[in-house]
Each structure stands twice: as structure tokens, then as C-alpha cells.
Length: 293
Image 1: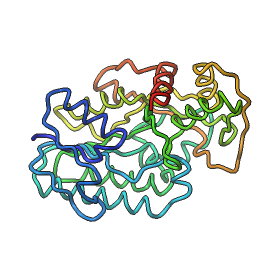
Image 2: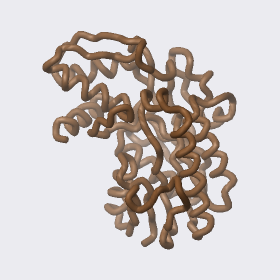
Image 3: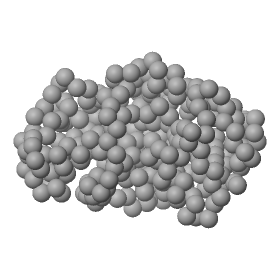
Image 4: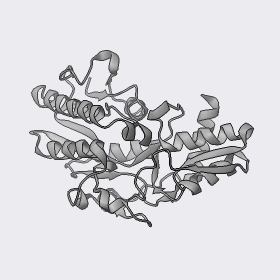
């Protein structure tokens, strides 16, 4: 066994595990049933390379409702995974960070600012979740092994709604399918919030490029360059489903930062351009997955 994947039953972890096994690697897939990563360092059983996707994760509703415990849990996971990698002789580890680690002041206005890796410490991150992810980034840089950090922007393709933990792409696609009967779709906020979304297969390919690099590239964005409004996504999904729903808007639910985009300048400069899945193709596949689930 040469590779271990932590969080292998999760959305991104399972996709990464499938990719690695398909590439001929012997992969140890570790899930929650193999141990609580908040309780202590995991047994990596001689792995040479580790991918860590284990996290207390959710969507905007989850992190606006819960502030203290997710940050504490994720901090413990980060510390325990890095400790295990150092003590058990792991040569290279991938640590999943988040675009929430970027300064909140860069995300308060439209049009969306393209966040660049050099801006990580130019202000206060988005929420406690973002502060922990910034700490993860800095701990990885100081770890006595090759610890690589991917700054994940919203990765989509998950066909399973998870309550408060559901992220916007899955939520809006599920709402649109339900609107075939109800005729209405509720949008949190005014619909003008901007984000960029990276299809899961493209995310796996980018993470693989970062890990296959002979040298550590430093913290690197893993995202789609080109933001789109929440309203635009909703209308795109409606067109794919073939309906024209009535939209309602609420300020009673959290809607997150005003605008966020991903700069791929550093990634492209190092690895070349990877042709991403466009939004229409990606959301069409997501809707197909939801209907089949």
C-alpha cells in the first residue's frame, strides 16, 4: 500500500479514491468507521503519500448556525493528521483548505474579485471555519515533511442533499427538480451573490497535478475561474429541467459573502490550462445524478 485517503467516504475523498485506484495505486481508504480523527492521530499503516479530505463540513447554513464546534473539530483533525504524517514517516501529504481562508474584505463587493494565493494573509478570513483553514495552510508550510495545500473553492457534483450541510449547487438543483411540481423556487438573499464552481472531475484532476509535481508548489487554488450569480445558476438549472418557476427571495436565511471568484493564474502558469467542465454541462450532470440517486 502506497497511498492513504482520509475522508474516503465523503464527496471529494471518494472521487479521489476512485481516481487513484483507477490509476493503478494501492489505496487505503479510511472513513469515520476507521477512527475518530478528532480524538487522535490515525494509523496510516506505512503510507508513503496521504490525501486528507476529512472535515466537519457543510454549506453556508451550517457554518452560519455553528461557529465554535466545526472550527474546533477541524483544528483537531488538522493537528492529528499532520502529527501522524510526521511521526509515521509519510513523505507527502495533501491538505484540503478552503476559499474561506481568504480575507473577508475582498469578498464584500460585486463584481467578484479573483482571489490570488498571495492575498491569503492580507486580512481576516471568512468565519471561524476560514480562520482554521488559514491556520491549516500555515501549519502545512512549517511541517517537517512535504505538505501540500489545495485551496478548494466550491466543488460540485454531490447528488445527495444533506440538510444544513448541503452546498448551494446541490441545493438549487434539488429545488429546481422539486419545482416541477411546486412551481416555485426560494433563493436565499437577493440572488446577486457571485461564486465560482468547479466540477468534481476537474477538481480531482487539479489535485492530482499538485500532488504529482516534483516540487511543492505552495498553497494553490483548486477552483474554476469565472464567477456566476446565484440567480444565473438558478435560471440555468431551470432551463435544463425545462421549467419556468416563480422565484421568491428571503433575507431570513444566510447567503454568505457577496462575491468570490478564483484566480487560476498560478495554477495555469505551473501546470498549463486544463479545459474545465462548463457550467451548463456540470449542472446538467448534477441534475442527472440527483434524479438517479
